[in-house]
Length: 332
Image 1: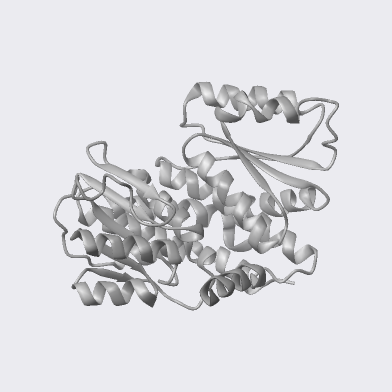
Image 2: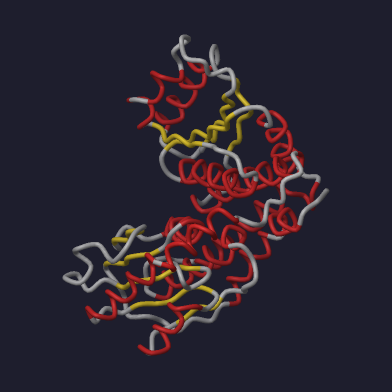
């Protein structure tokens, strides 16, 4: 069975290209930017910030409110929430309004759109009607264009075009090498606990995307680890033969343009895990920009997560536990 979620995954290059047509008025230049976002929206905010210039301090804040320094630095606040109702993000926007900070709302409507309308703040509306995790392309493209409007990113259209072309090439309409690799890795992980490992930067962010996509699409526990941090703790446990790790499958995400020492660490890590934990596959990032390399690594994971769901007759779209949890919070 081919699910609607897989179709959305295959359409992600077009979601990125949607950002090319955004016509945003210039924003006052910002030396400090706070990106608010949780879950898939927070992932999009982080991905969209990858091209931020060295002269701008860009921080992704996941949680309630704002960083304590935001008001004193006159930070621009960019609220990224697909639904527009993410509780933590709404709290951050409310704090920004109270502090008199400039903010931009990115989403498909909801409370942050209402707050923006009341304050006369800019809004970027993305297409609605899908799960937030499926809107990563729209949200990351919108975030990047907002940062460009604030002078924090240069040449956003070229970055979006490159990423879209890279992912298009990987998918090949559903029979490309990247798509096939994702399906093969899904097969290798069906009876194993997935762990994605990536070096700091695009690969580590993609590893976290692998984890969350498997969590939500395949409804399976999964984990991610970041190099070099894991070489100071997790490696000891996973590489110890006394640990029953026969049900774990590791996916290595490589970033050829990253720090060479981290790539060496990834290679040594996989060798030390090899006697104890099965390797489910290695995915190598493609593209000139960090944004493209993130997308090339994340796209294969998106395919793998949905393929795992399809092969176990799981509907990848609904997230009933998460929705029930949110409803319980609202009832308090």
